[in-house]
Image 1 (cartoon, one colour):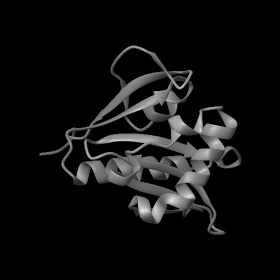
Image 2 (cartoon, one colour; image 1 turned 135 degrees about the vertical axis):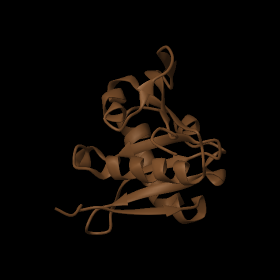
Image 3 (cartoon, rainbow, N blue to C red; image 1 turned 90 degrees about the horizontal axis):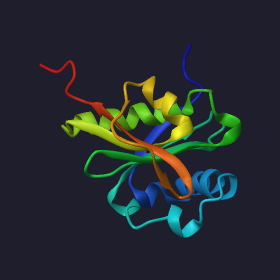
Image 4 (spheres, rainbow, N blue to C red; image 1 turned 120 degrees about the vertical axis):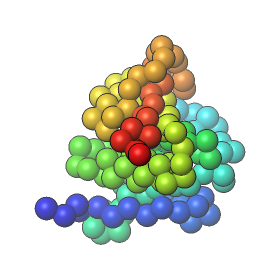
Length: 147
């Protein structure tokens, strides 16, 4: 069955409105992260992935930093568990692999680490606090299976 979502990879100028809306709804309003922590100076150097529902509404977002770090993964609450986050994550991992990064890294909110494990990420360090929430560092070996 085809996915009900489409993915768009783009730069910050193209992603800004949709990515900012999703991130503000998830991180700032839902999770209480201060806006000044959520929005940083890294967006302009990142590639962004946006997940769109069939009606054209952006429902998921994430970004890839130049060093292969994936961050700011967010899915609107009513769309969680439906595949949009998985498509965004896979698009960012594929982009990191195409850029020949040896590893994709991310800092997962601890409660969401199981989601990332399903896609091959492993915890690679101790739990820490970020923006008032427990996180774990995770990584994925992008060279596994390469010849």
